[in-house]
Amino acid sequence: MTLHKILYWPHLLCGVLAAVLILIMSVTGVLLTYERQIIVWAEKTYDRPVSSNIDPINIDEILKINSDKFNGIEIRSVKISNDPEAPLVISSKENYYINRYSGDILGNGPTKLKAFFSELRSMHRWLSMEGENRAVARMFTGAANLMFLFIVLSGIYLWFPRTLNWRNIKNILFFRKTKSTRARDFNWHNVMGIWSAIPLVVIISTASVFYYSWANNLVYTLAGESPPVRGSTNNNPPQTTIIQNVSFESMFQKATQQMDGWTTITMSYPKDADKDVRFSIDTGNGGEPHKKSDLYLSRDDGKISNWEPFSDYSAGRRARSMIRFLHTGEALGLVGQTIAGIVSFVAIIMIWTGLALAYRKYIKPSLKKKTA
Image (cartoon, rainbow, N blue to C red; front, side, top):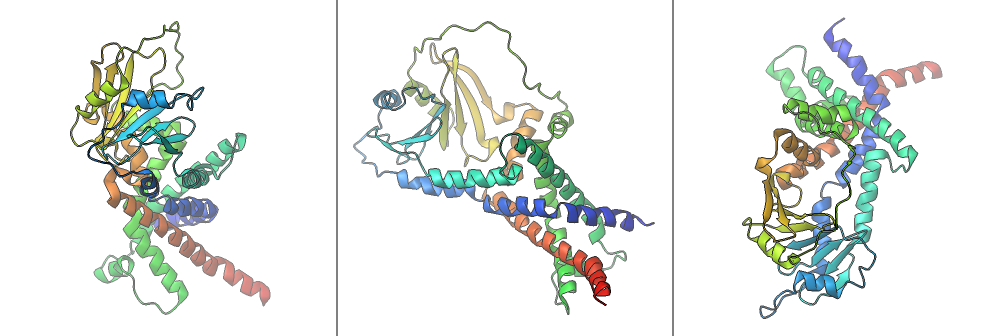
């Protein structure tokens, strides 16, 4: 038996068994392509024209003005944008968009739009299941993802003609006129498969890290590091409450001076026992981890406790940070997102043409015989 036949049958069976799940993940992947840009566009409705004679209100004052509205709500973060018209965003269980020049709460943002994308992600990852059913759904989508990886890798070999010459290679590299729907589907399946193989391998293999701990650990192992231990317990006695001696406003001002060209700065709201306040300084669009840096400022005197640009991360941590955004293409900017969206759409066509070819070759003849 040739290697071609050895790979062909598992390739076909995986395609048939995982077709529906791969189709669901591909369709939702297409719809999620420009999620970040769409949400940013929707948030523009909260921007306000700014007079050159008005200065923004002190951040501590904004928190004080709206303290009654935040009463009992755990604040998670405070984010400012380098755009003077953009509102300040306070995140808790929901987001609060606040006018930086009046302190007024403008609203909670495009909540319906975010809920829509959240539901799409839930469908993409675990088929919108909840509770215990979510773990079962993850098992199926994770298995389908691995099957898809095998389909693409085996397809790279199967797509190449047995006789290597330019005429045969040209037939699988480019679209051509065909005389039947079967020939058209075969041509589309080959052409789209060979041109999308590399980005699909990246998208699928990075998704495996989210499903399986062994895949996540492999990232660190390949980087020459020991995987971090999750769920470790902290046996240290509870710390006393740290007094906030430095204003958040002065901390934000220091963060803005730390790096030129920043687009957003997000402060993780400190807990009572935190000695430092963490600021995430982003010079990109929010989906480019290599353009983010972490600044830690002391709550006691406001001095820099630690400065961690992306370049200072360990190799394993850099790789793991990139994987989440390589999966969506965001790590490569708008071009990467577009490529990820295109190949996700191509995957839909590949699944459809693959099933059509299998039906015509194996199911249709049997039905004809049965009818006769």
